[in-house]
Image 1 (cartoon, rainbow, N blue to C red):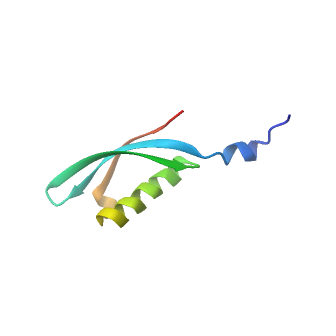
Image 2 (image 1 turned 135 degrees about the horizontal axis):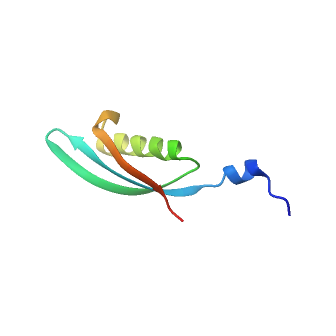
Length: 70
């Protein structure tokens, strides 16, 4: 069967994000797996989640590495 490229690009992928949150004098490392279509979407989910749960601003969240999982 013929695959359409646009359908293939809409496939949800798992991304592992490594980073740290800086709150005051403390730095808390994290690694988190998120489901997203693109790396950009995965970053947005990380910022939204930490902002919601930890009240961290975007400049307080430092992303160290992002890798796509198989």
